[in-house]
Figure 1 (spheres, rainbow, N blue to C red):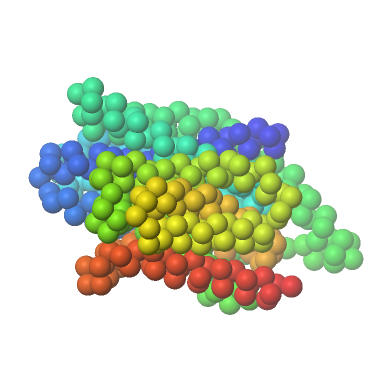
Figure 2 (tube, one colour; figure 1 turned 180 degrees about the vertical axis):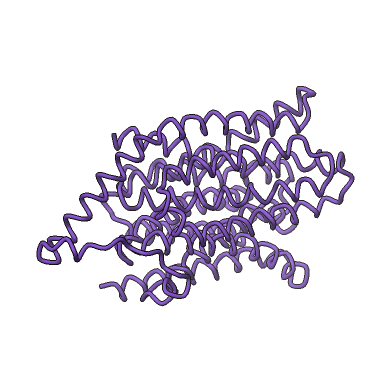
Length: 401
């Protein structure tokens, strides 16, 4: 049963990654048809991020009340409906409207599934889970490219992904009895543990209430893990958004070459997570974070290296991607161990919210700073977040001994 659930969760994470790269792939065509400036894509992504942050913060309450399976099924249905809404939008305000259920659905399913895997599966499974998210982000640009080059328009690209989401929604709703049975077994096991700890008295077993945001933030070490998570997501998203511009404007690399290697950063993350799965259980979450961060530092040094060989900087981006690969899943997987199984859903929900704050605010901040200082600041900016991430992670490790 748990193997079947894991396969369903993997499929759900592919669907979670599918929409993430659609807007960027289609926007060069979309903004012209909608008659809006290129920069207005940022408004759509900010609305999506706001919805994701809100639903992430409420994920503890929702998951405790309904269970991870129903929350996942409804959330994927919301994203499928939102993607179809994108496909029929002929005005910019309509995109903004459909971005609301898009963000709400994405945040809820992200937090619910991450916590479920952190509680019930191994570090290897968590690493491969996020590898499947990367598969989704790689597939969707090809779907959009086929729609555009085939004369079907960006609308058909969104409809195709929406259809894939609807198929997965049907699978998730059909699998609800499996989720329910697994939940009952897990609750029974937890009840036995609590009764034993309370001397065998069933009266001592009480259902856990969802934590408020204030209560969760007061848990020892939560502030540190939020700094680490925020820093990682800021580093990852800044690299994804600005790597090509840095290579072209500062290193003088041809734009087509820079774009190709910037995409290799994402492929490096996906491949790195697949490979990390084979060693994650052996090394453990703490060492996977440490090793990943050290590889990130090596990649940043290669990007910043004052040499005339373009291949050094280009290789640096791939190395950063490989280094990033184990960090995100390892931080999440360690959450129940650090803060308790009963608190993990609330803490992971806050982590997801913090992640989207980092990905929403920090790349634009670099854009502002680079316009004043110069885009050569890129490697230093990444280095700063890598230092913050490592310092917060190591401080948390010492605190939890």
